[in-house]
Length: 636
Image 1: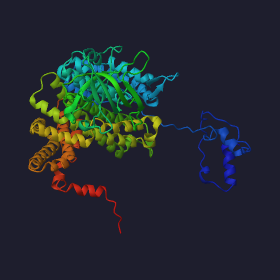
Image 2 (image 1 turned 60 degrees about the vertical axis):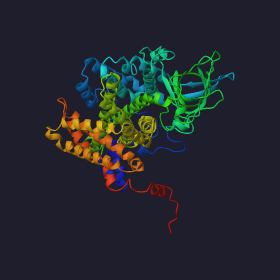
Image 3 (image 1 turned 30 degrees about the horizontal axis):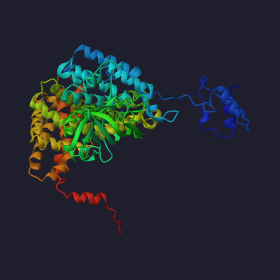
Image 4 (image 1 turned 90 degrees about the vertical axis):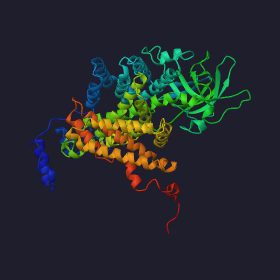
């Protein structure tokens, strides 16, 4: 009698047929690691021995079953991104750029992404003392973190923006490369953002002593010379409010240099080679000028003395953060840090403004890149994961969800790249006054909008993996944790919304004039494309609503606009992005997907500030909001 027949006879004789009545043909043995020794004090039954001999007990002892879910595979992110390739072919179709990005994308997928994972699992640590008790304050980073620095120099991830080999499109080329690199960089894009920002500040102030060599190092392609820069401005009293929050003082020295004394509460990329920072110059009596008028910009190199101690710096501790754990962030005591003043005395805030422009754009690139990366992985996973007898890609609801994420990702990319385009025009000397106004307005808008959308899209992306999206060693949760910083660093959503109001006021409304003019010109180019008519109508209608809002708001008290600031910024972002999607869908190389993305984008509420104005949201007393938030009454 066969094993199957013997088992069937035993089950039927026992009066319990159930599923045993249908016995499949014998399957091949499963080759898994196993242990056939019975548990102590227990003998295996004859029935168990028969099943094991047939290979039908995959979960005994060390057997773990035959099924393993295929993991999503990161493929070349350049080849996998139709929108990026289409955008570049439309605007800068030079083969050298396309070839470079394709080769770099392959390198990212095959090797660099593994380095990024190593940075995540081997975060930096602080060694305060050497074995003999001497204070060294040495920040130990992984080998992969150091490789990222060399790679950044070799690939010109900062240098491209300053070599300007491709004129006004050099910034788009540079940021496209960073867009591919960012999700795999182990957060090395953060020190690169500050390095780029520092180079921009030095360039704007004049490349001369004492920063001539530093500028050369920040923008070189030679790893042995390449420097990164920090940006040490955040102190304990406040982040964005540097005017009242900066306590650091600069003590003049007889040789014209300064020594800095203060406490920097949050310093990113603390292993940088140099930094830019704000401080208040003391006069001979030790007095300083309060407010932004008392702040000057300083340059300092991070170096060690002959005993290995940091000069004028004590690292108090590394910050324990929700995300961005790959990057060393620390609290620093500046105790006589040698420095040189770069700005005119009292002109520190305006002098460092260029750095904020660059770092905010980098932040936006990282946000768009995070959305794209989680989508690329989710798309691949949808071809590998089966649920309810179908692959995820064959479930229409799943595809609808990914399509909504795709539309957000496409909108973010085009918005970011248009700001990069404007920056490139400004730096190449071909920008009009109109371009300059548009860049000033859109920089805070793109940063605040993409930072918030990245969180939403990445969170949805993790959900598309089910439980695996919540498991740390898949690497997926880290994408979400790291995305959270994007809406916080370099100005929260509310801070940047108020910055939008400031740039409107300071330009006497000229930034809005440039915005309306350019958006209308983008729509005009699509007026004859019938397939895009619904999208053109939607954006055009929203633009009219926005103009009406601005006219009404101009007659109200400042508090009215302040309450509307966040919704205004969102409206500016959505309307302009819709126009960019429409414009991209009009070029001769556009695909049907480009048209569909534009139509889908324009189905949403493009002008929330007008809707909420009609509902009276900005007329209500702000005290009612406060009363609601702090309501502690006990209901009877």
